[in-house]
Length: 277
Length: 270
Image (cartoon, rainbow over all chains, first blue to last red; front, side, top):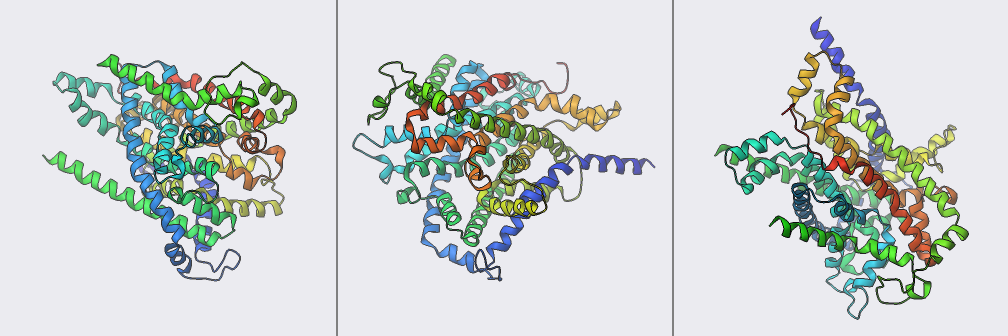
């Protein structure tokens, strides 16, 4: 009897998931499956099974290779950089109880329209003789723009994470004579792991969006050093080549996912080692 | 040391403020000053011409403003309500296939939006034939916005951090799941909910591409799309429009900022 009640209770708890699941299934999973089907079709309008033809086409295409190369450089530099910066900034803001207006200043860049960010960056980096955005150093400008715009986004998440840390653990460590570095390494950073996971994933998503500003500045075919995956996808979208678009998107997302799993795996092994000592 | 860090943060925040200063300062400039090549941060004379022509000649601006307010409000409400329930299930209820389902949520969060956009368009198009009109209405943006997995993901991560003992203790006291959610979970994840609100607001306030595909009627467009068109077509009012565009974000931040600084002591009354 008790067990049965428990079952009913559990079932009731899963019904909480139902509204989200129904919407998610209809609007994301089904489209995802349709997308897979399209990626194996001859063309957008001819749904004959084409095997891996589209995937091979995308892999071999120079535009895709260039896009992956630039996007990888951008992500490998930009993402760790912004995570470290926003963590340190959040830590300092939280510890020093910085005035809310300062937080607002850092957060505001995410709220202004892309067009005015582009206008600002075009005028500050694009004129005065040396046009950085057309040079091979253009990526540096884009990374600065990315940091500038998205640090506030991550800051909000980290600040929310800091409020969640169990203060008694910190107090106990202080009584045990831990210095600040030890506190940070053994208590604060590990306790913030779920928050860092959010920041990491959201940063990846936001790194796709930097395309918007590049697009406003330089259009469909920018400086080759700035040609990103989103350019490739948007151009395929506009030319109605969904079979190529979906193949490219899946290849790319799987690459990111593989990277995340590798990271989680290494992190787990590392923390196990530390725990064993 | 503390003072140095503080001063450093203040200076950094001023640097962050530059594009906003630039936008707002430009909104008070005459068109002659705007068309100069170099970067202008101080208006030669304080001029309200841009705001004036926005109010007189571009009354549609305010209609688009309301469109965006409506769209983002519904998306935020849906994200938070549906997100809290689903996240609780993911974080604290055991059921088969949970891990795989959660990975699927994260996977689709990472998938570029272009992939789901076309099938969504097709789906809404089919519904149209059954007399359910979603395409070319704000629902076409609101519904996918509500079910975007961001809220479930953020809130699950935060609810996972709540000690199980706290929930077990409430259960022993006879609290049902709804009571646990209201009395135990919600107070602890308030900062996360606020973070979700502001992040969802920003994402959808700035939404452009989805609107262009799913909405045809120019009058129903969100403000972000309209601003983009006046940036290319009519720069004389752009900066005034862009400055007003920032205000709702400031409003939301001010409303909830306090949740980002309060620490919570978990586990009771120490």
